[in-house]
Length: 390
Image 1 (cartoon, helix red, strand yellow):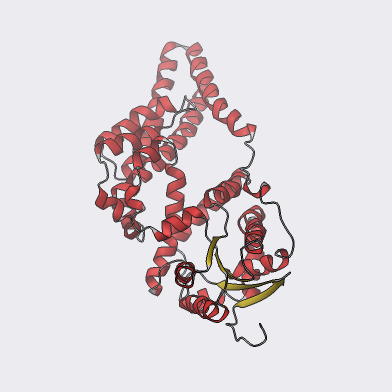
Image 2: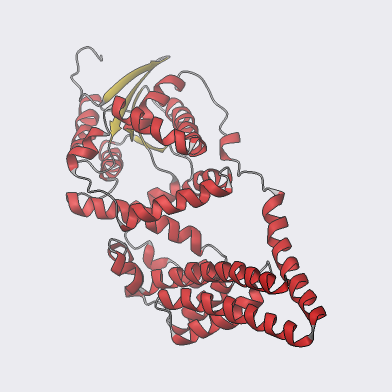
């Protein structure tokens, strides 16, 4: 069958038992990839079409009103603001590229979904849940690698080199993708393992067990070599779906800093009540001011900024609370987003200005920047108080 059917160059055929598996290696922002998916499905007429999506991403892509249903108050209260902000930053990057190239991000996946409906092929969501992937990536990173990764992501969103269609198409070539991954692995080997290699295994098993004899799988070009190697044998997916074990060090650090601060402040009174009061004033002024500055940089409501100033010195001494969470809730109550703000979110995140002006993303920025200011304020105040105690 495969000898008589002409398929796009991006298609890799793998025989697994009685099954014929056709891996369409795509770029996530490529008109040619959409055409490759359509041509492959038309010529193969598969029993099942697998797409590199999880249930959450499938829902986000196929339900246009998904953002309008979001409860931002619940997001802040459940302490998921930072996670949502990180997702929006990544989404922003792809949307800006898609807008520049005149193509919706993930259009090749949407094409696969559309063709499954039209042809009656079984649709298989073959990827691991995005939240599990991100938590495994983040959970297995060391502290300094987390700082390094966050810095590089931020610089990539705010600036970065121009990316055109030719550059994106070049990523479909296996040798170039492997060269990029080789460089990436030097700086972040754990990310490559969790983000690429583990998902190669997960995708391979989902594709291997897809129903039918002829299977078309729409996956990123970088996953094709790994899937091709692993699709022949069964794999246990349970270990790949487990969240990373929680380290004791964050807990010790979370409680250790407030205890050390309280000990330092209490000890300063042994040098006289005036010295102690001055150190207490430094603690409140520095911590509160930098947290309030963070909220102000997010263009928060004046009462939200005042809340951050008052809350930061107190929440910094309580590991169960954070100034950003308190400020974020106040911002929601004062400037609750309207349905139109939620519906405008996909367009707002395509620009840095939109991030600051949309009430939804502004709330997330209030949480993140007020927390960041409080953290910096804690270390600045502790260093200042410690220096006065020498």
